[in-house]
Length: 368
Image (cartoon, rainbow, N blue to C red):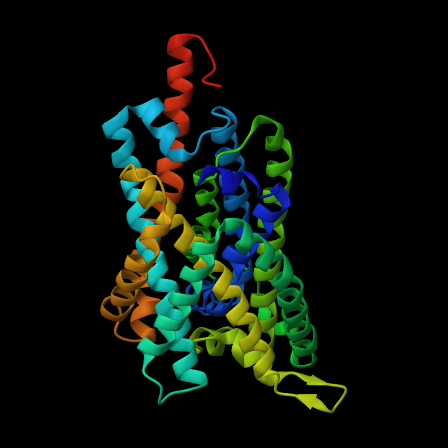
């Protein structure tokens, strides 16, 4: 397992994490942010991005103190075997939840906008089976696929935002901080947990010579993802207004329907669907890989590949039974999921970093 991971270049790791952050969340987070902080949703995204970048820095710091080790080995080293496994168990549960969450939300989008007569289980099964096949082939294959799809994704993203500006009204963004900082900060927490998905880089052991490059690439990827999120929510609120954006299930999809290029080309819904599929697929593959890898590490298995088929079936069942509708998905994503995710993505790494420093202070040596 580790040999496959070590062949991923730092820039490939950054590309995967960029798509993981933005690939799925750019479609529904603007709606949630607008519902919580209104026309100031873009400020919430800025705060979440800053917090996410701080999280990336601390994660790389943790890995730098234990070069060549993943978070499972680090946790057992600094917290002991059983306490360490308990901490990783929380991470492990979170990876299961997010796999079923992404699969169900993506499938809800397709049934809502494209094929309402098709059973949702069909989309869930196809997405998870395809992701499982990619994971079975190895994480280096995922990196190559990401390299190929990212330019297409970015071109589509920029095109939609740029040409939707024809209906942009900057007055929809004023007055700034009309209701103060409280709703802005309240909305930033759920946004942070999606950027905080970068915590899963801790499952990828880094060599000492890679650390500087990895830190620079990941901080750049996080900043760029945050910039795209801020730009998208500004365009959505400027075009639709904060109230209408908050009522939309997928604001970015509706931006595509607003686009008119050179007075001839309009309704770029197919482009929106294409970049959603690309982004969601990469995010699903990444988290599927993490679920397989963490399960194998947690239970002492030599290879994660035999877990692929059982996890496809498990995640399909969870995606069907955990949520009843798109409204239910958004309720879980906005109210309950952030609390769980925050403790896994921020709480566990911070505890491990603190224990690492305490251990080095007690022994008088740096763990690395």
